[in-house]
Image 1: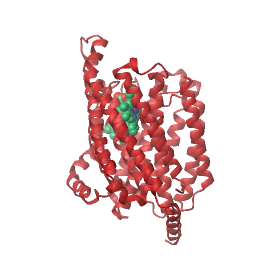
Image 2 (image 1 turned 120 degrees about the horizontal axis):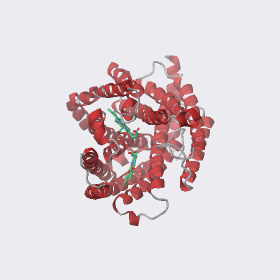
Image 3 (image 1 turned 30 degrees about the vertical axis):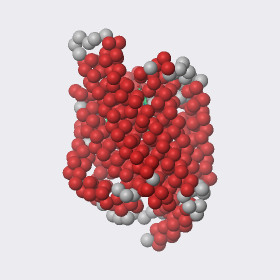
Image 4 (image 1 turned 90 degrees about the horizontal axis):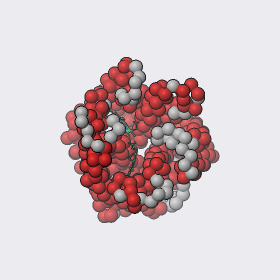
Length: 458
Ligand code: HEM
Ligand code: HEM
């Protein structure tokens, strides 16, 4: 197997996914039988290790997808040494972060709980990504929507990541409310930024599958991009309803979040054509993951819009409804699109093997079903806890937690099936990559070089 610029990122992303799944499975044992989960490293370390592994799966998978797509679009214009340095910086950061967790050197903030020193190699790696992206994107005439999305995602991530470390300055550490508001705002912006990278990839893949270059240039695609960008910039107020910030911040977050109804209604409106499109492309294995992501967008968006209504957020905040949303979106939407990208970019030459592989097809369906049970059980536990939180005369905490046990068993059981299914799919992507024709990378490079020459002529 020859490696192009993007593939080492995708392979590392798959390794992070596998590690993250095992850690998540382990953490879920604390929900049902903590006495069997072992003392070391404990839930306080397992949770951030799971969340970091999973976040690196998303970030490295998105990086690899953008590189693979750019290589197909413009070929050899990117710097291989810069990409290799970028990969090495990520490897240093990941090693340092896990060392930091295992030594209980936390010190960071929610979602980025490792010692802040390890943020530096990530920031440098991201700068190299920006440079390489700029080198390639300059060669593309009249950017299709996905190139705009990638640019937005890369630039906004860098900005939000810098903001994420404002707390290192004494002023922010000393002002608790400002510090907390910034932390939650940043988490929202980081999610929004990686979504741009991943949604851009989904547009690109759809264009390749459809063989219709109009998809990425349509007015509707750009309208959706601007609505997404608007939300990325201004909807973060919904993360801080419970923090005592100025009212206008919360109202803006609320109003902007409600524009997401447009996406929701559009999905309903296009339902019929989506079904016929699904029938047309279902034989194409990577497409199935894009189809699954569409369904998960629908379910998660419905839930997210409700959670963004302040009166309802009072109930859901701090409960498993938020955990259901965080995992429902990162698994159902982000990971499904990344699986489509892995199967397309790593195993592109393996279409017949993928489409006819019974194990992979059955596993794909099992994963969707297990995720549904996983998501529903977390939501049910969250709603029950939310009612308890707001009850005028709540039962003791222990009694409430005991009442949630059946939901936790369903969550852990479905989680075990889901983790196994996703591990098998990750194995399938690796196998497809391994089987890919030895000349695939060279052919891809040649295709890219031809595309580069053609784009220069335009
Ligand atoms: C693929 C899309 C999305 C992903 C991956 C995602 C992911 C997340 C994650 C990881 C969190 C927990 C951490 C944090 O508070 O920042 C979160 C919280 C939240 N998200 Fe999303 N999200 C997505 C879309 C949306 C949308 C479209 C809305 C609103 C319409 C939304 C509303 C919320 C709210 C209200 C919270 C805070 C819940 C609370 O703490 O009470 N999300 N999201
Ligand atoms: C691709 C697969 C997965 C992704 C993307 C993912 C993502 C996440 C995220 C973003 C969080 C933070 C939630 C929050 O802040 O509210 C989280 C927490 C967690 N995840 Fe996952 N997860 C995955 C798979 C799993 C699996 C299969 C299991 C269990 C079998 C699991 C168990 C957990 C547990 C126990 C937590 C901690 C919840 C808490 O704080 O109480 N995850 N995961």
